[in-house]
Length: 165
Image 1 (spheres, rainbow, N blue to C red):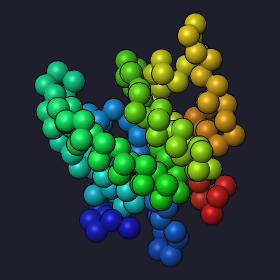
Image 2 (cartoon, rainbow, N blue to C red; image 1 turned 90 degrees about the vertical axis):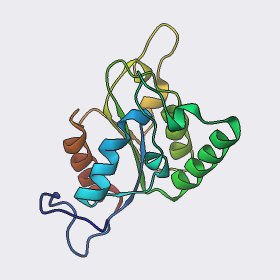
Image 3 (cartoon, rainbow, N blue to C red; image 1 turned 30 degrees about the vertical axis):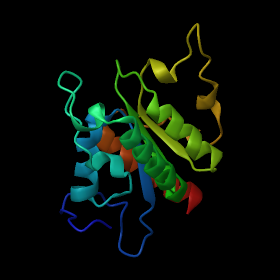
Image 4 (cartoon, rainbow, N blue to C red; image 1 turned 30 degrees about the horizontal axis):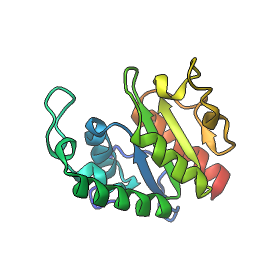
C-alpha cells in the first residue's frame, strides 16, 4: 500500500489482502487524479508518467514539450510498467482524443492483463472509421463501471479481486 493512506480510503483494500499493481492510462492532464488515488487512497498505481508535469491542454508544459529522446525513454518505461501491472485502468472524458492510452491498452491485452475503462470518448466507440473491436476483447471491461473515477477505481478493483485473485 502507499505510504500515505488516509482514513477515507475504501474498504476493498483490507489488511492482508493483495493490493494489485495498477497501470493507469489516460490523457496526461488527468495525472493529478491518479496521484491523489495513489497518495491518499492506497492504490498501488505504478505509472511513472503521472510524476511528469504536463500543464494543461491550453498551456502545455513538461511532457507535452519532450524531445523525441525524452519521449522514447518515457515510452520504454511505460512498456516496462505495463508488463509489471496486474491490471490497467483507462480513463476517458468526452472530448478526449486517446492515442497513447490505446497503445497502452494493446500492450496490456497482449500480456493477458485485464483492462478496465472508466468513462468514454469517441476513441472507444464505433464510428465510420473504426469498429472499436478491441473493446470486445474478453479482458476488456467497461459496461459495469461508473463514470466517476473514484467510484470506477473501487468497482474495478473489487471486480479484479473477485475474478483474478
